[in-house]
Length: 429
Image (cartoon, rainbow, N blue to C red):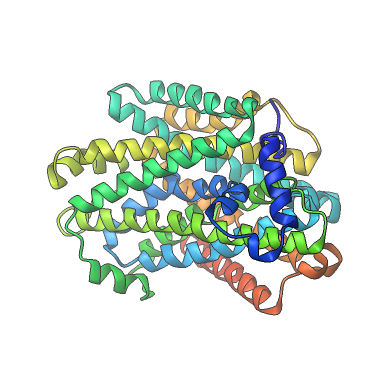
């Protein structure tokens, strides 16, 4: 089993349906059935925005600072929408993914550096995702964390094996797991005493109470705008739909942008729900809650029967789905930068190895999750800046090169990330 070719996983009926839509008169291209033909890439990419790293940073943000950091989650999600849409556009227009274009356009030392940083980011990503799923299984079934890790490895490999029957089943499986996560948070919010007016105000009022809040804010950004997701989306769109002309590509971009907005809006709402839940449950009486294990044990006595169980179900769904997608992204990144690929089982073993090392050394799992998100935030400028560079060039994108407004927004988003990272590095020094 190797890196997926998007066209292999689509039935002939779906491909013909796409062709009919792309060549049909403009007025007949409406309806949710039409949109569903092209849906999938943003759904897969969006799971990166709901992984256990988000859970860890969101718990700390809500418990320690109440609703104060909700604006960070919202802002990060808006920036994520922009960069995921740019990544999808790159794949649709060029037929190549971000890693492949980087290998072709940049000097070899730069490519090797980008690959090295991206591999570190992929391992940090999988550390969070794999540990989160394992922790959920460990707590739910009362087994050692190492047993939970083995179980998570087996389950994620089984989910990866679904590719053998086509990629559409993988998309459906990921969408089902996203639904599980979303419903879980809806149920828990119904149990929690939420101050909705305060939450709404905090969502649009930028504030950073102290240096620790800055660290968590950077972690939120690293957990929300994921480096591997920026690479992955271009790979998921590069050969998916059979566009042959510029008008057809323009239509594909419209479908893609709509899917990005919907998929990442759902992911953003889930992340904000996690912060709101942690704030409502812990901030007023238990602001010291900073670990997933502690949050689980305290949810049932604070919110009622079933709250802890529902929390673990969402955590397991998050860990398994995001770890699966992270492995696919890592494989695509390696192949794009080096033209070399390894079997998916070997990739799965390599990326989950750091998680086993962390557990063997006795490192606190939640602390490892939060630190991994900060690592991701430092790795993030690499794909962000490369993506801006390629999508603004007319020699690569033609008529689809970024407008001045898009360029300004993308450069501004990257500048915010770089600035926050610089401040955090200064604090650490």
